[in-house]
Amino acid sequence: MKPIWVDLQVNGYAGVDFNSPGLTVEAVREVVARLNADGTAAFLPTLVTGDPETLVATIRTVVAARKRHAECERSILGFFLEGPFISPEPGAIGTHPVEWVRPPDMALFGRFQDAAEGLVKIVNVAAEIPGMPDFVRALSAQGVVVSLGHQMATSPAQLEPCLAAGARAFTHLGNGIPNLVNRHDNIVYSALVEDRASVMFIPDGHHLPDTMLKLYARAVPLRRLIAVSDAQYPAGMPPGEYEVCGAHARLEPDGLLWNPARNCLVGATAPMAKMMALLKERIGFTEAECLAIGRDNPLELIG
Image (cartoon, rainbow, N blue to C red; front, side, top):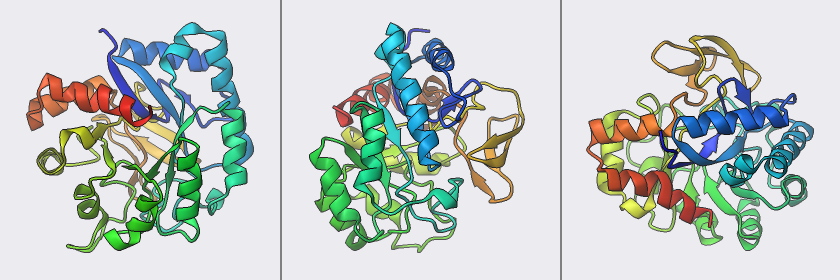
């Protein structure tokens, strides 16, 4: 399979976890090889909320892999920090460990960016956290894409300060939110009608039902849609019990990866190629439309 897809959210793959303190350069190289073989040409290693020391160490390992191996430099475009600047509330936090959630902190972000040698491309934040608009403005001034997600903000009024400060995307829209939301005033509707920010979403057949995928396709201009895998390290592994983000997770035979204790999903296990096939077969996307949302739009977002 010729690798053509660009995935902005890869937490791990084929048994290798980008959030593991034991990450090695050769393990990073193995992930690149497996993703390339499964159709993904380039991606952003994604780091969730966790011990800053561990995050800095793993970032440095990925940077070392880029320097040592040409295929890693070619495929790894930067980093996506999904945490720790998110909501600690149940539902919004998902499977992120609550003890490591932090308020906006430019010094902490600076540690991550220094370790990445300037390659942090996207930072996910919760819009309602005090001080977040100033944080968004500062990150945007550095050329970092700020995405809104894992938050309790729902209405345009709550989102507006961060959008006006430069936020440019919504993180896996429809996920990382409480299961019960207001039928009218909710983040999904607010994001669908917001022209200033791209909608990232996970079309793996588990995170969003086909009806929601069809709604996104009809309501959002193609230029604002970006498919991501949100792959976790059990992707490509056999069904069974795993530990993801420091908590127990179960991988079902159909590819569903979930946390039974919190009754929430903990990432996906399908590569981009499989998700693009789903969008074509079940939602009616054309090959050209898939190339837009699975290659061109992601590249444009991160410059």
